[in-house]
Length: 263
Image (cartoon, rainbow, N blue to C red; front, side, top):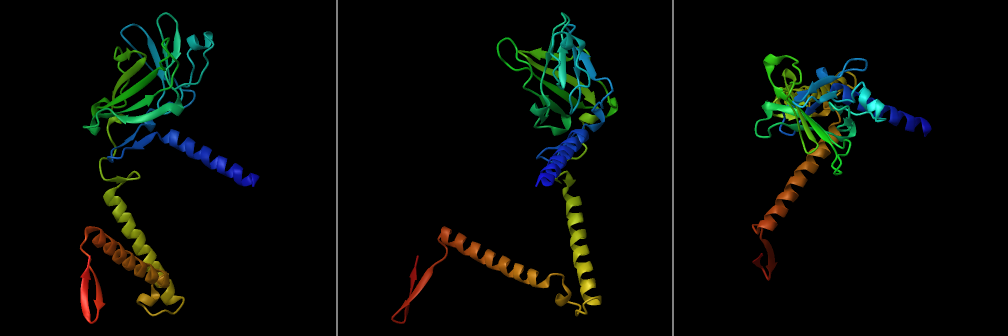
């Protein structure tokens, strides 16, 4: 029992690690983004930018910043966070948490415009409002990796936004996606797997078990026979219920040799 519990924990930790390292997301509309190339691994310098007031911002993508700013350490705010603000006066604030991270489109009506990471549940402002920050990656194929734009960090009522034109802001897949696989790719793989299943199963039954080539050689033929019968019965039952609800199905009863219609 203990071994099973440890195995489950290891699997969960591994899945979390893979998810954060890959740093990709597919929206319900089918648009996919992959920011893995922007995630700074441990030991590398964090991304940074400044605003028009001289405040500095340090952050990472899909992970906590690798270094807590000295200003935070000196103020005893050594809290792991994905983003920090260090004011020109020497104050330091953490702007969000990894457990409070969401993916959002910059423009819902134009998904190709770019994507943003939204970190929230940051350090509270004097009024009790938690700080949050949006790292907005605008699609610019010619910008390459790009960098956060200086003087384009905005702050309003403890809500921050960082502007970053980059090729990583462009979708890597558009429309018709199922679990990150394009619709046609999914159809192709489904057909291929069905062909592999039927072909391999028939071959084994014919050459190993001596079955006659045809339905008898079909792998799990009994199961599929019962399955298709159940499907037909289910369709007939559903159709009957729909017709009853729509009032299209009449019931008949024969009385004294005369058939009467009810309904």
